Structures are given as C-alpha cells and as structure tokens.
Length: 94
Image (tube, rainbow, N blue to C red):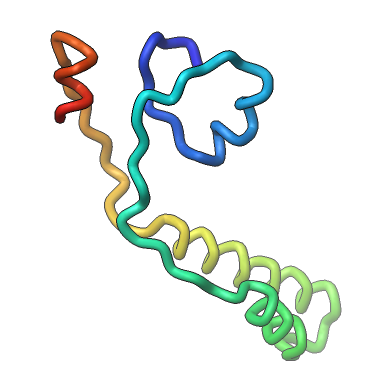
C-alpha cells in the first residue's frame, strides 16, 4: 500500500480495508474458480492410516494436505508482467 495506484488481491484488501483509506477504482473477477469441499477431503485423509508410527502418520498427512492445497491454489502461470502507462485512464482501458 505504498504506491498511489497498485494491484492488490482480495485477501489483502480484506485484511486492510478497515485500517487504510482506499478507493477501489476497478476490479477483475478470477478467470477460474473451482468449488471444493476441503472438510470432506481432509476428513477422508485423516481417517486413513499411512504409517504405524503415530508421529510419522501425522507428519505425512499434514505434508500431503499442505503440498496438495498449495499446488491447487497455485493454479496456472505465476509470471508477472509490468507495463508503464501515461495516465490512469490508459491503465484502466488496458
């Protein structure tokens, strides 16, 4: 939030919306949204037995959940492209 104009994700805006005086000039909806019942998947994972050792079993289940959810949230390409504009209206048109 240190620039006059910037791109922010919704999760960031939700955290700072009450603390900072901001004006949302435009927004873009995500191109892909997939609904998923995370609770059901986690419950199924935790109901299985992966290892006989209790501590190893917990560790592996947490690792499986964290890695898979991380990969699912990553989605597609993560490259960022920067463009320079002469005015705000030109940036909004783009």
